[in-house]
Amino acid sequence: MIRAYKFLIRPTVGQQQALAEMLRDHCSLYNGALQERRDAWRHVSRTTVRYGGQSAQLKEIRAFDPECQGRWSFSSQQATLRRLDKAFAAFFRRVKSGEKPGYPRFRGVNRFDTVDFPRNGDGCRWDSTPHDPVTRVRFQGVGHVKVHRHRAVGTVKTVSVKREGKRWYVVLTAEQARPDPLPATGSVVGIDMGIANFLADSDGEFVANPRHGRKAAAKLEAAQQALSRCKRRGNRRRKAVETVAGLHRKVRRQRLDHAHKTALGLVRAHDLIAHEDLKIRNMVKAPAPKPDPEQAGAFLPNGAAAKAGLNRSISDAGWGVFLTILHAKAESAGREVIAVDPRNTSRTCPACGHTTAENRPTQDTFHCTGCAHRAHSDTVGAVNVLRAGLARRNARKG
Image (spheres, rainbow, N blue to C red):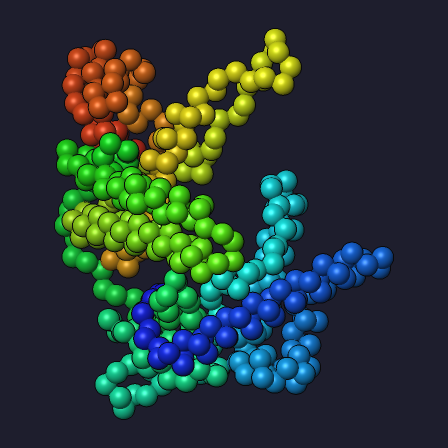
């Protein structure tokens, strides 16, 4: 199986400068290739430029600019051109399907943070000094860089170097043998994700919502206000931008850490995990405006302010990240994860099956109007999710 690993690297001052120059030159190559495609299409001939033609020009580009483009790996430059080609392929796919297309944009030097090496040993080499107790990765034009490797990896296939603020990381994809599945526990569980609680399971247990974004909101607001007061292109503004970005990265790391720990606990304890098949992108959409029929150019209240607060809470919970991690960990552990239809899971009585909106008088309370069954609404939702998951599994086997 193929797995990805991300390790912190510790370059020297000179290596940091070389890495920054590598990102700058690859960004210049990306923007130049994008400009060539734009100009060719705007010409009266409507010429289409593709990856093959641009890749064939690399040899001449490197010979013309040996001090910049000629310093770096040929394969990494090809990967940068493929990256642009994928952006255009995604653009045309969205145009064809009627979605909002989003034409590929030029990248600023501060918004181009990754360089890919398609094959280990071609322009880069993982564990380049095996005789050294410190793991190092070698990049062409940079040298041997120390790596804080905190776990073993398999056979490395691809290598990427990534900048996040003032830190540098190496991202690997490695091939390794599929791990042995965890011992069976005989336990199955359904989970219901929410805002008040991050999730509730069918056993009546709850996982609190850490609300990392809300806890950091005051600091983020102060940092954003300080940023808005800075003049453009100044050192104060650059530092303020780094402060805001650092706070966002901290929240993201906290959210990832919570998702990993919660998913690992579920995978270790249960053989089957059922969850709601949530369409999160649709859930966080802003409500459509309501034109006022009696007054031209005016609009009726549509609850956008309240919906914005709910959208922030949904995004802060990080359901999508959690479900992605849960599926990955379950696959490695030999567990089964089933997504079920979320409709009416919190409105259906698990005792008698009666379904109505009146069964849920408040956000936390479930009181069946048919049989008077009482429980926490999230627990009821988790029980119904588990039942639907078991029914779906039995239907597959049947």
